[in-house]
Image 1 (cartoon, rainbow, N blue to C red):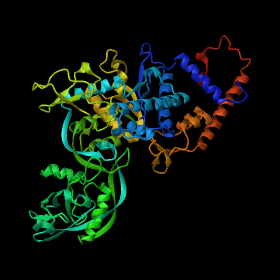
Image 2 (image 1 turned 90 degrees about the vertical axis):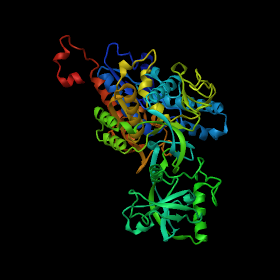
Image 3 (image 1 turned 45 degrees about the vertical axis):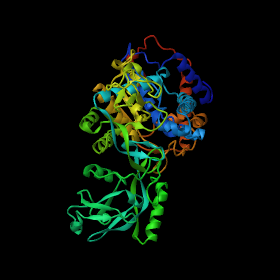
Image 4 (image 1 turned 180 degrees about the horizontal axis):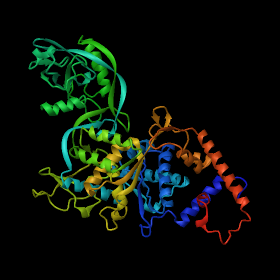
Amino acid sequence: MDKKYDFQKTENEIKHFWEQSEIYKYRNGQNRKVFSIDTPPPTVSGNLHIGHVFSYTQAEMIARFKRMQGYDVFYPFGFDDNGLPTERLVERDENIRANALPRSEFRSKCMRTICKYEDEFKSLWKRLGFSVDWSLEYQTISDLSQKISQKSFLELAKHNKAYLKESPVLWCTECRTSIAQAELETKECETTFNYLNFHTPIGSLLIATTRPELLAGCVCIFVHPEDIRYKEYVGKTAKVPLYDFEIPILTDENVSMDKGTGAVMCATFGDSTDMEWYQKHGLPYKKIIMPDGTIHQETAFIGGMTVRKARAYMIELLLEKGLLVKQETMNHMIAVHERCGTDVELIPSKQWYIDVLSDKEKYLKAADEINWHPAHMKNRYKIWVENLKWDWCISRQRYFGVPFPVWYCRNCGKAVFAEEEQLPVNPLETEPLHACGCGCSEFVPEEAVFDTWATSSVTTMINARYGEDNDISNEIFPMGMRCQAHEIIRTWAFYSIVKSLYHTGQIPWKDIMISGFVLAKPGEKISKSKNNASSSPMALAERHSADAIRYWAANTKLGTDTFFSEDELKISKRFINKLYNAAKFAVMQLDDFKKPEACEESKLLPVDRWI
């Protein structure tokens, strides 16, 4: 052994030895029991950071442990390289906007970009000594993944579990696409309650609003049916300040009597409560906010302005005309898109949904059949399922993703689905195999793409090559383990369970291992979007060794967030050097050791056998 441990030399040599020997290759369970792992395909949305290394390393240790126990370990790696996160990366790297280019040209740029990033990702995992079978590698944008994802959609549509509906949808005006409930985050912000008088035949009605830009979209005023202050107002009409059109005064038991003045304006749409009232009471719709985040051109005073500018201008105008009674500053929680932090709006749109509301009990029961590590993470899942309000919106108005295998009849508008032998199919480039039932053979292709989670949720099926000639579902399903971080319990874990139950009738995996975050500072996780990682993982490995990073990652409880300091790797490094020196000392003492013929292993003490 060398006098001093040279990790650069040793780690490089052992990495090549592993690769040449193919010791991590999955052998199809021919001679051993199979342990299969559903590894999160990292999103191609930027460079990897120490947070990724932390969670992926913890999972990789389980793969090694199971292999040492004698299992044939199915340990694939994939890349989640389609959808909004990848689009935003390409827009940022290329300094372009996706909608400014022909779709084919933008797609080509996306493919070039993901190849570059995926090569970097793969190099890092190999540098860290991950015991992955790289022959099982997959991409969520590959033809196979697209085919399985589209097949999943067609199966759900056939059983009326996937459906098309026009209704108010959560909308990000920055990304210009619909989003799902699971993509919402809440943030606290300072805002202003603006008190305005709505004139009625029996006197003024004082109402507080944080969104005066929606006055033109008012459709009614609600009061609580038991609020004695407003009994005489119910059934009357009120004039909207500045715009002077009349709206009815109605009652609803969901009005909070102690918030604001207890009377609230309903506009289409200020928040989810407005949407619920709109649907419940059959209210009219007034178009105010457009998909690009501007006010509808025909809206008096503020048409064409952005929402924020319109809000500020309306307050100025109300002050100028003496219509603003008073203002109060307050902090409240607003919904934002997790990808970009933009305030989410509610805009009517025709979208594809997957039914998740009708089977909540089934999803809760499935959670009890899965072993959660740590166990308390199951509660996060259960709370999410119990509080679901909307079905899963899976269509996105974007460009680089898995296309919907759907056309619409130009004559009757009916949705026409692709045949399975056409998959994977792009309806923008291909026609249906048959005419519509009405006899028309002209079609309008669906331009939306799947939400990236709609494909990521079938990683177990992609790994099994579900429905293909070389389907190995019987070998690996349900998978032994899913590893993932806790913030995607509401997305990846939930959606995977939904899809697995719908398509196979089984849970997707027996165990789920939840890792924590690495924090840059209190309350702030290290992330690609925040660009707040101190040093790249590859640079850290070159300076301190892969083993030092792995030892650090092993020192935290599952599901627990931790801080990272490079100084901690120096501690790891010292431990590894001590281990090396101890081994070197032991080898020196054993130089002249010859195993006696009579030294049978069965006669050794347990501690000697272990060593």
